[in-house]
Image (cartoon, rainbow, N blue to C red; front, side, top):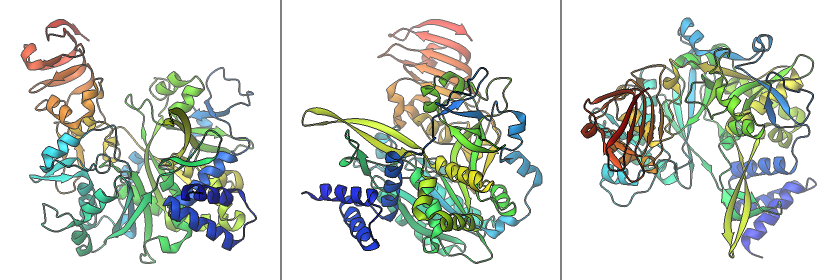
Length: 584
């Protein structure tokens, strides 16, 4: 019997047998952790996902949007009101705070009583952005090891090239030096793909100070570094419904939501701070330089004693696919907060409706999930202890278990195609499920929605999902970087262009930089490009549609009389001849 099979057998026993005594459990856990390379967190997370897979909660049905003519007696669905169309009476109960209202109140100084514990999700290398050639040119090295998604790309501070991972450290140093908070403690979230790259950042010499980032943190009063959380590859489910190590995969970013609650149950897992201070946990996207709160948000968490806040932004026409918040009515005038994903809407035949929610003239705002979560540990710990005392630890983790995403993958084995199901979960559903239980069991919620309007959006949500996102943020006239705070400034607040670059070459950072080098996009509203175009020296405005046949490359300044193009559709031949020009 090989070691992997032994470990799988031990794990199956651990998950299925409730009659094991403590020593038997520890022996099985030791075997699993040793062979599969899982620490306590990843083993607990695997157990949570597997139990949910084997024992789906009774009564849980897929969400479906309530619209005019919906047959609510159809019990195949859980019926949900998106915030864009929910009844006014229900919205009055919805637990939301608008960031704009916090701005009206202004700062009162209570953020200075908080220590931020900042965790940026840097466990993925980001296959959607190719950057080998770009990094070779930036570093002068031929052998490149890709780091965390987006964070190995460079910005420019005072004439020095600094990676996004470094910029996030510099942001926190600036916050502490400005006295915004009592302190900031940084914590890395890594995987086998990114662990080495993130570890090396701390030993790297900052080009602005001549000191390593580790030294800069240790020399700054109020700053700290609490180590790292590792996301392991976990076994998947084979065609017979059993755990298998023949294919392993990460289990999604719900791991970090589970971890954020798990540390609340164990003081030794949290950083030690003064008793008169509030520890505010922050989890955000690693590839997003803006994915952190400001003092207004933190002050609100402290002043209003908010246990958990999910940060959303008002949906715009570039947010057609991401999750958005909804309200699910229950009996006895109760409700719970949920989130509808695009895949769910597609499965119920409501994909088109989902995309238009919040964008129609008759709708109110739709709240788009940013993947930033704030946790007030002083407030949430007593609630969680109360729950643990009532139901026990295993039942607690089953309550907060994320909604499962069953990601089916195929691979060849002995010449045959075999299917495996990867068990994954999204972080937001961990906190939503906790909140739902508290509403159902105790009649009170723990979670609030903190919504940022479109004017303030890029201060808190500017993910780098594509190579163009990076070029726009760091190599265009659309954004600039504040060299003191290391935060981005949107030169056209409230507006972001909708950009569809259909040729695969635009997945590559160098190709995209070359294509848009020296162009101006401040007034660009949308760009749909089919083919490859070089925009060097061009000013792009309004709505643009450009079609170039496959295999062709067009340098626009050689083909257009004016170097400014606005609200136009251009169609070229494969040879680069302008065949059609139509005003949009």
